[in-house]
Length: 358
Image 1 (cartoon, helix red, strand yellow):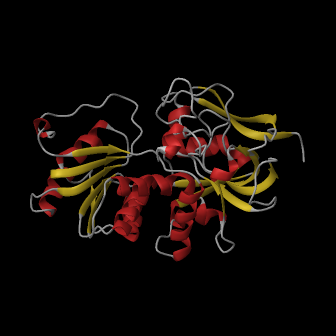
Image 2 (cartoon, rainbow, N blue to C red):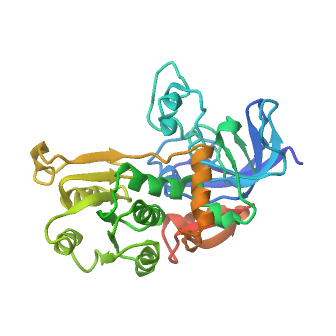
Image 3 (spheres, rainbow, N blue to C red):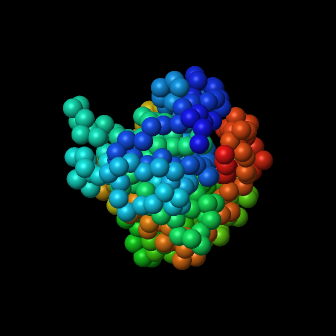
C-alpha cells in the first residue's frame, strides 16, 4: 500500500481539485477504509461555492462505502477486509450530545459546549470520503457491515441522502392516513417521499419541475405530482386538499420560496419539517405564520448517523420496500471528479446522484 493517495481537496471557493495527500495514520479508536464508492452531495456544492466554510486543504465528501484496510488497536467486532459503510454524521458515542440522544449534534465534549452540526465531521472538520482512503473516527460507533447481497450502489444513499430524507418524515411525525407535501424532488426530496410512504402517509403530494424526477417520485410513493413551472403549487395543493391543507410539509431544497410555500400549505396545527441547507436568512410571512397563533410546528433535521441508523436503513433496502438505485444516474472515476462536480453543480444531463469510484 502506497503512503500517498488521491483526494478531492477544497482549494478556495470555486475550486475543488484532485491532488495527493498522505494516507492517514490510524489511531487506537479509528479504522482506515479503502473507499470503493462515494458520491457528491448538494452540501459539497455549497462548500465548492463558498456558501459553507471549510478549511483550505480539506478532503471533501461524507458518503463512504468501502472495505476495512486497517483497524485501530481498541476496535473490536470488525475484521480487516470487511465491507462497511459509515454515516455522513459520525457521532463519538460518548459526548454530552450523544448521551442526550442527539447523535447528529455531537459536540465532541468541547469546552465551548454544543455547536450545531457537531456530529458532521467527514468533509467538514476532518478529511472526507472523496479519496482513495478515509479515516473513520470512533469506528465502533460508526462502522456498519454491508449485507453480502447488497451492492455498493444499493447502499450508497444510506450514509446521507436516505438518512436525511427519512429524517424529514420522521421529524414531521407523520401518522397513518396523513396528507404530506414534499417540496423539491432532488435526491433528498425523493427519499423524503419514500420515507413519508413508509411512515404511513396515504396522500403524498410532491412539487418539482423536472419530468424525470416527478416520474421517479411516483415510484417512491407520490400520489400527486405538481410541476411548479405550470401551476401555482400552493393553490394546487390547497385544491387537492379541499382547502384543508396538509398535515406535514417537507422542505427539501433550502430556499425562501420553498420554505414559505411549505408554511402556506399547512393546516392549522400542521408541521413544517425542514431539511434544506439555507445560505441566506429566512423570513416568516405574517399571514402564513398565522401571526404566531396557528399551533404549527417548525422542525429541522440533520442527517442521523451511527452504525445502528445505518443498519436499519440497509434493512429497508434489503427488504425491497424501497429501491434507491434509480437515483444513481451517472458514474465517474475519482480521477475525473472535477468534471463530475461541474456536472452535478450545474445540474446537467438529468443528474441525480453520481457514483464515484477510485
